[in-house]
Every structure is written in C-alpha cells, then in structure tokens.
Length: 319
Image 1: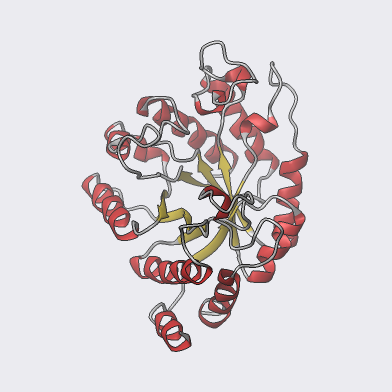
Image 2: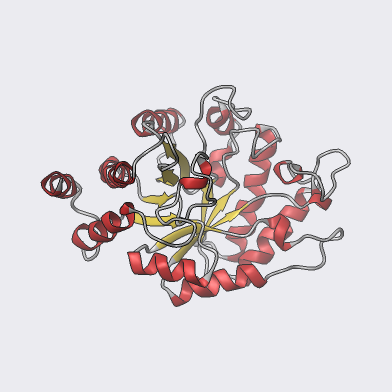
C-alpha cells in the first residue's frame, strides 16, 4: 500500500498554481481542524437568505459570517465565499413564505436587491474575501428554479457589484452538478445555453463538481464546451468527495479516491479543488449525504485525514 501511494504521489509533482481546500467550515473548531490538516482554502459561506432575512431587507445578520471570516484570517485559510439563495421576501416564487422549503432556489423578484446585497457584502469583507462563487449547481432544478437567461442576469449583476468594489475580485460561476438527465431537474445544456447568451463575459473562473467515477468525463465536457465558445479561463472543482455510507466507499477507499483524484486534477491543469466536506453532516450510516466528511460528525478523523495530512506535507507545501 505504501509503495503504491508514494508512486501515485510522485506522479503529481510539481505543485505550482494548484490549491487544495475543504468545504463547509463554519465554527472556530472547524477552521482549527482544517488548518491542522493543512488546508489553505475553504469553500464556505452564509446564504443571502440567512443574512438579510426580514421582509424589507433593512436588517443584516452578520454574526455568523463575521465569525467565519475572522476564523479564516486567524488560521490563514483563504475563503471562496458562496453567494447564493434568495430570501423569502425577495423570492420570485408565487406567494413565497419563510415557511416554504424551496423559496431560496428561485431568482430574486427584483434583481437590484441582489446587486445591492452583493455590493454590501463585498464592501464589508473587502481585502478579506477576494474569491466569490455565484450560486451552486444552477444546472439543476433542485438549487435553481429560474431560467438560464435569469442566471445570466444574476451573474451580470454580481459581476458588476464585485468588480465595482474591487476589480481584483475573482468571480467564479457556481459549480455545475453535471448530473444525469432527469435527476433534480438537471439541464444537460445549461453551460452551452449560458455561453450562447454571452454569460462568459461575467465569469473569471468556471467550476464543476465531481463525485463517483466521473472526473474524466466531466473534465472533458467542460474543456470541450469552453473551447467551442473560445473560453480559456481557469477551471476549479468546487466539490469533490466520496461517501463512506453503508454500501459506499470504505475509509481506505475514500482516502484513495481523494488522493488519486487530487493527483489527476493537478495534472489536468485544474487550479483549485475543494474536498467535500470537513465533517459528516449526520449520523445515519445508510444516508449518502450524511457521510461525506473526512471527519465524522463528532470530529473524530477518518483514514482520509491521515492520507491528506501526509500528502500535503510531502508533495504540496514548498513545491
């Protein structure tokens, strides 16, 4: 096993311009653990709907976001902040209520509210956050119930607001799910339609997600599609993981999946990879989503933690 792992690691040199992060850090303990493992990036954030929650949108609840940003600074972890999810009072869902379970997936009914929020949060964290991901898996109906045209508009206003605050802000298009047709309202032509409508003008970095044995297929699709539209911007993978739920990966399998995937993505030229996620989100061993963490829900480490720890110190830092 050790010889095989070392052989894989050697194939991945050198590491200039390659960043490795972890998803979903929220507490000081999360940031502390991530720092100890060696992560230099995190893809995290607080939903728009959780910050600007009241009917008229005048009050902002910054406590959670402020704590996350301050923790990231203390632990020298760079934030990729996800800007997403519409408050109920601004949702274009008909008769939206805060009691609904999907109001946040609809486009805002007034795009200026979105623009104002993006500009306010960018100004608040100017110099502290410089990379911003707009939405999440917008090619699925599960997270985006608007049209492609509406998403281009969303990107345009976010891009304008972020660049007005700091022209060096990096605007990342929300990571595409690239899932199977029919699953969660998946639109297999979303990226092409987005580019046909001129959406590329509002993107600095394109992103996609990887689960299972889909890396080569999804990377090829992204490369070919972007080339077709003369888009030569960087590619990031903003979710990448393997679940240790019953019937899924063993702990060793999860560890090897992550390490081998990092090597492949570095060699493909992907600039940033965000492993999903730091901790299990639940304790149901039969639930796929509950068991994606490299730590368990109680913060005890899985085998992947040790593999990643060694990987980062032998073949990442200082290269």
